[in-house]
Length: 85
Image 1 (cartoon, rainbow, N blue to C red):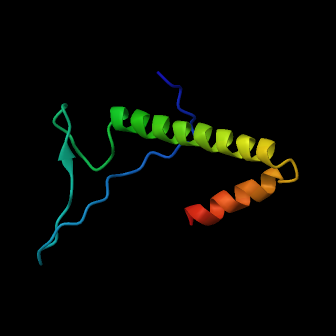
Image 2 (cartoon, one colour):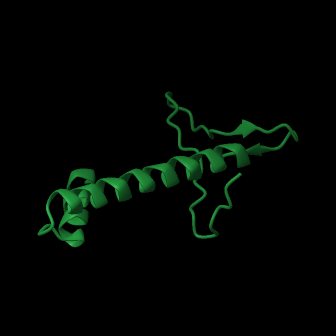
Image 3 (cartoon, helix red, strand yellow):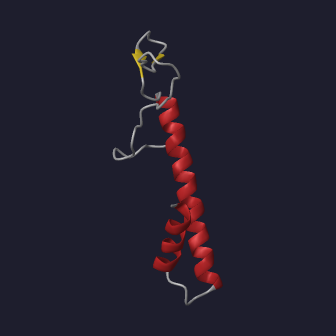
């Protein structure tokens, strides 16, 4: 089990419900509490996915540095940011 840093965001579940009447999107937990927050399991899964992605990006940047020694790390990171936007 990963230790999640305190600054990793815990997001609320966003949803869109059709119809003219106002609606509130919630779900009921096992403790019979209504909430719009993700569960601890979903939070851990989101962190593990983000951590895996970061490791993949690190390997990508390092492989590009080996392929082209003149390529700077900052250049590689800028290209990744550009693609991600």
